[in-house]
Length: 561
Image (cartoon, rainbow, N blue to C red):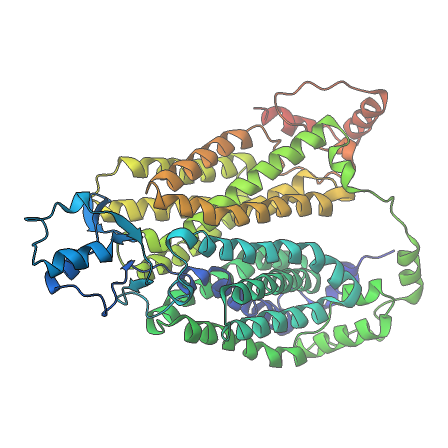
């Protein structure tokens, strides 16, 4: 019985066909890069203050003093949500009184912005915040919009795998790309905050679904050596390219509707890919569609200039493959033993913390000192070296030390930001970018590390549960940024503390570098520092593994914490 890689080995690893699939699938990820973080500019909050209507019977002097002053970041600025009572000011103005000399303004009663707000147009011409006045009492709605997008991502994560297993990788890829593009286009014509938010949930569902479908399609079509580069560098770097394009679009298009339209239109460029990107031959074989799989492989051989065998897939081998049934496992198996339960809990904490840090820092770029467009671009650029370093670390160094070091770097510099003097803006921004580098590096490694910790029988479920924790972290991340309205350093203190604690926790995970992947739950590597009660079954399993080769236990001893 030969596996798929053996059967298709005659195609080679890096021919014209593989290069075409690699770059087209990677390029299909680019729209995900700017759609995921576009809310940074779509929901940007410009400087604002209460509107004083022209009809108010105030002298120019009283009009200039109609907004109270307050301290913000060490400087005096107009209040964003309160104004002096206009009726009282009109009375003072009619009497010819002078503000500050004849009237003590601190004793004048305040009132909310009954006539709306005036927004600065220095940075944004319009955003959803200025469109629907999502400030003051309604300022919680802007981060909620971002959280709802990630709720869509969470829902999409649940259904995308099942849909692609049932209907095919290619079909789901293009349907969900259409879903992302179509609902983004409808958002341009939103007439209310509620309409925009509901559509944003659907955009999030489409975004993660086509990301997962492209990822799976690439890993199933490409060979072993190229598959690793595709999953760690190809997908990630093209996502970062899309992220880098976002501030470029936003800089030249300052109105949110036209910006969203400009970000939506590139999705139409993916339509011609339908006639170029094939369905996954592996999936076709799993569905018994042998002839269609052979046609795709023969076409790939032709593109590569190779003459393939007349019969590629033996129907008898296929029948034997389909007749093999694995023991079924449920999500409860992730909690069955003390060891797998501990690894599951630690993985959930790890993924959630990394996600909060990554998206929190990405969404916080407008709040940094300096130009928000430049800061967003730097936040995107820093991801490219992070992905490359992560790939090199995965190839050469132990997993848990690499993960812990990246997290500790990211968390410690975030904690150090509060100690930077207020006038050293450049240093603060540099520290934020170093923090983003460390957390992004950890994000790129955590997929591989988690997959290596879980055994084959529950690997998909283990990575899926951890990924779900990541989505929950991304849903929470906008509110970490929101806390910056109360204390500028609070988001950094919280994200930095969580990241450093998680870096320490990671050291207690087992080391998987250079060790064969476990197939069963009993073969899983052990968490450090926990005593286990050995049952007869586990002892027999350990004896069997020891007989198969003592190298594994030797490696474990040398890497013990």
